[in-house]
Amino acid sequence: MEAKYCKESRVIRTSRIFPNDVNNHNTLFGGRLMSDVDQVASISAARHSRSECVTASTDSVDFLHPIRTTDSVCFISYVAWTGTSSMEVFVKIIAEDLKSSVRRIAATALLTFVALDEHKRPTRVPKVIPETEEEKKLHETALDRASMRQQRKQKSKDVATFLNVDYP
Image 1: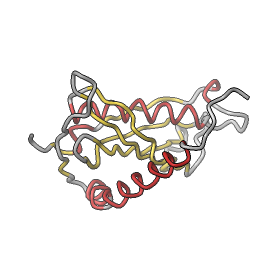
Image 2 (image 1 turned 180 degrees about the vertical axis):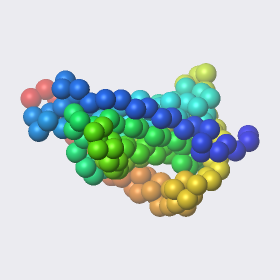
Image 3 (image 1 turned 30 degrees about the vertical axis):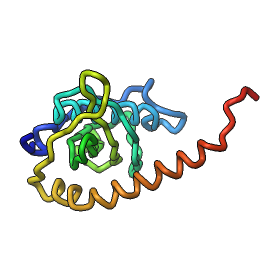
């Protein structure tokens, strides 16, 4: 299986912020941003693997600056690292004030997707080749994040063993 460049999975989506997209603080509703992040990241995962993919985890979503109705919001995603069947997708969210043209990193996110074969079982994915400094840094630091994901997943499984599924 031939490795692919990060840019081959890149997705860029820009949209406006409308009044129905904001919360009571008149900034983009966090749940809306998270939905958009998952959508663009899923396209990156599918482009990289050329197979059906499922979201395995939303590893982080960090809200750095509010996004207002005077802004556009640009989502840039790509596969930054791969395991055997898993793909770590990075999403950078850039807000741009449409009057002043000031741009800022409004949020970042990391998600993990798993590629599935025709029987809905995990299937191998190509490795990635980072080119830019940003891609290289994310790729170099991915093993630490993968280890933290595994630890967090095990802790979640441990907690699930004593959770009650009965109705209150």
